[in-house]
Length: 246
Image (cartoon, rainbow, N blue to C red):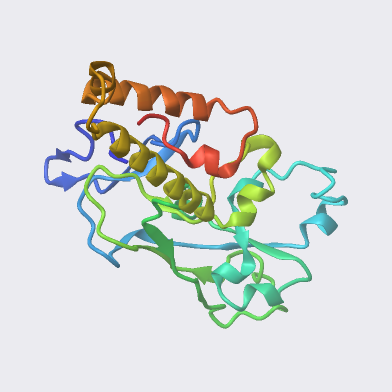
């Protein structure tokens, strides 16, 4: 998952640390990339605020699940529990809008390399009876950190959670989940064993058999086999996780 060439360069003394570019995930739009090498557990960017979304169905006068109304930021909200224990207690139904790094990175379960902390909660002494209680959010400094070393030019991936994709299957199709990659890896290992068996000539093989087991011919045959497999009409998440080429 590397970015286009010449990304993350320096302008004067300023070094580009984070930037937006076309995602390495096909059809995912823009992604967040790092212009510098990142160490494991290194904090990046700035801490995000989280804005509580309270009883949205009540205030909108309908049901979001039944699509009675369109909620513009629905793709960018998290479970309230992700921000800490306090927000869930603010209303009957709560969620959290997290701008910044809480909204920009794409998700790839196999390649996830960043995560986020919970928010700091501080009402600065303002109670629910004060006029200014709704003028700001008491949730701040939700910071992003790396799960492993990340090379400069790499895309940053976060974990949206399985439910996010399951609830959008009609729009996004069968996006691979973590267990999908495990099944795909087992399948690809079996193909590698097949390729190794074919590439090892046995005594008594004809000239045609030896030619078929030669590297260029075998590579072409395995590539054709992958194409046939990817065109299988009955789609599945593990099938989506199989590489597009040999």
